[in-house]
Length: 289
Image (tube, rainbow, N blue to C red; front, side):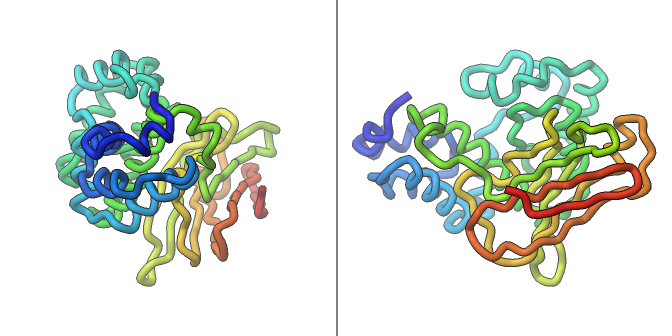
């Protein structure tokens, strides 16, 4: 690890090498090198996101994806997730809990994904089990080529931020790493968090809903990284879609509503928390904090 001050005063060549550990897009890396010195840790996080989402092209996104190991067969999955090296170890540690059937299904899904989109499946795997990632890749396989690239590049920057934290000492304490959008699902019928519920965030663009992010609630019923740190949504209308049907099937229950769609408007850069209170025959929501 190095300090932000150290990073600011590295040579261009050494700074390039450091940033390339986090993301291999040359456009992003060069811009980060040239934007030094960063005033503070928050400045670094904001510029990292601004460069990625505003200055990088589709080709830059695809170049960044090449910096991840390919997942395409059972053995590579086992090696990648059960015995990963260096930084990737923490990012994908839950894969070691997977059974053979899940690993095979995930390998097949990854192959289908690459065949359809032309690049490997990119997901911020921290804290996600193999079953959760299988559900996510199957959901994203339904997207168009254009729409999926937007979701994949969102996941790529989540990974970049995680690696910036591993590179810069104290970044997680000194910078605001929160997501602009968060969500929380509670099952009021049993009085517990609604875990293992798939939720997608969509934005209204060109007169249709476009996917931005896909995640699955954790054991506390939350998704805290709908968006990567530093990314602020443009002002406009958005929709959170809760897959309640799959949630009830997972918990061997029967629900009346197969999904819940909550539309909301982003009017500023403040934090937006979109919670859902559900039971098999009803639901409610409010703007949380």
